[in-house]
Image 1 (tube, rainbow, N blue to C red):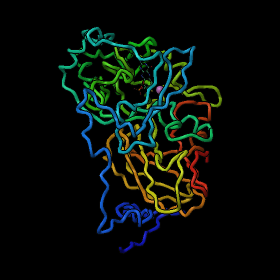
Image 2 (image 1 turned 90 degrees about the vertical axis):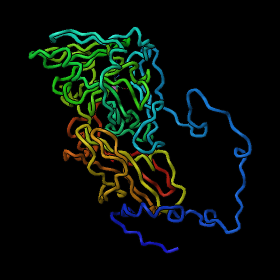
Image 3 (image 1 turned 120 degrees about the vertical axis):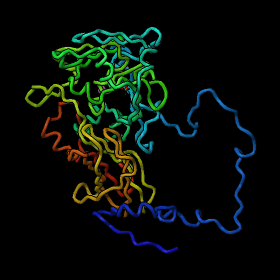
Image 4 (image 1 turned 180 degrees about the horizontal axis):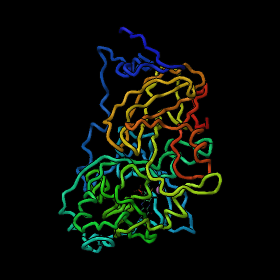
Length: 419
Ligand SMILES: Nc1nc2c(c(=O)[nH]1)N[C@H]1C(S)=C(S)[C@@H](COP(=O)(O)O)O[C@H]1N2
Ligand SMILES: [Mo]
C-alpha cells in the first residue's frame, strides 16, 4: 500500500484538509492486522442474523445501543416547570438535530395544548384584527428552511472561565432543524399593518405568558409561524402547535406556544426584555435588544472529557454558525491559536444554519490546545474569549461566542480550559 506524504499546514500536526479522503482505517494508524481481511477469512454469523426481529412499530425509536440523551439541569422547586436540557452535540454528525434531542428552555414547563382549542390572535395596529385556529393555519402556503436556534445564555461558563465540562454541558443550548411554517409577513399583510406599527409583541400560551417584542422590519423579513419541525408537527417542548421562529436571533425571542401577536408603536418592555435577556455591563448599565447571535464555532470531536487512545492521525470535526448569514470558512488551531489551518466545510452553507467542518490532525502524543474560529458571509470573525470580555465583561450572562479551547494532555485526556 503506497503511503501518501501528509502535508502539514499549521503547527502541532494539522494536516491539509484534502487528506481527509485518505483517512481510512489504515491511515488512522489502527492495528492493520485486525483490519485487513485474509483471503481465506470466514465471517462469523452474529446472533442477530440468525432469527427474525420484532416487526414494524407505530412510532420509531433510536437503537438501544446509541444511548443519546439530553442533559437536564436539576429541577428547582421554587421554579415549577422552569428549566433547561442540552443537546449532546459531541455525539451528533451533520447539521440536523433529531427532534427528541432538541435542547429545551422553559419558563413554566410544557403546556399540554389541544390544537382544537388553541387560537392565534393578530391585533393592535392593524386594519382588521384576525383570529386563526390550527386548521385555518394549515391551509396557508408554507416555506421550509434549515435554521439553528441558540439560547443567548449558551456558553456562559466559557466567558466566565469555568474549567471542565463537555461540548454538551457548555454549548448544548443549540440545535438546528428544518422549520416549516407560514411567513409571518403573509399573516401580517392579511391583517393590514397600519403605518404607525413599528414593532410586534408576541405572547405564548404557557403559564409564564412569555412575551417578546420584535421590530417590524425583522417581522416582515424572515420570521416564521412554524408548525413543523424536521417534517413532523413541532414537538410540545418546542411550542406545539405553533411557535414564532425568528432566524438568527437569540432563542428567547422565538416565542413558543404562540397565541397573540399585537402590533404596537414601540417595544412592549416585557419582563424577558427588561429584567432578563439584557446584558449587564461592568458599569452596571445594560444593553437591551441585543438580538443577533454572533459568529461562533465549536470542535465537537475530539472534545471535553474524551480521551485519545494513542498517538496518530485523527479527524477533528465541529460545527459553526452565525445569526448574520452563512458560514464562509472555519480555521482550526492545534497550538492554542498561534497558527491556523483552513478546515473543509462538509455541509451545505445555508443562511443562519449550522455548518459542519473537519480537518485531519496528526497527534504526536504531546500537549496540544485545539481551537476553531469561524468567519461568516458578512465578514464577521468569531471573537476570542478575551475580546468578548473586553466588550461586555463577565457579568453580561448572555451572548458568549468566544473561541472554545480544548486542552489535550500527554495521556490523551481532553479538557475545557480558558485561554
Ligand atoms: N412561551 C415561551 N416561549 C419561549 C420560552 C418559554 O419559556 N416560553 N423559552 C424561550 C427561550 S429562553 C429559548 S432559548 C427558546 C428555546 O426553544 P426550545 O425549547 O425549542 O429549544 O424558546 C423561547 N421561547
Ligand atoms: Mo434562552
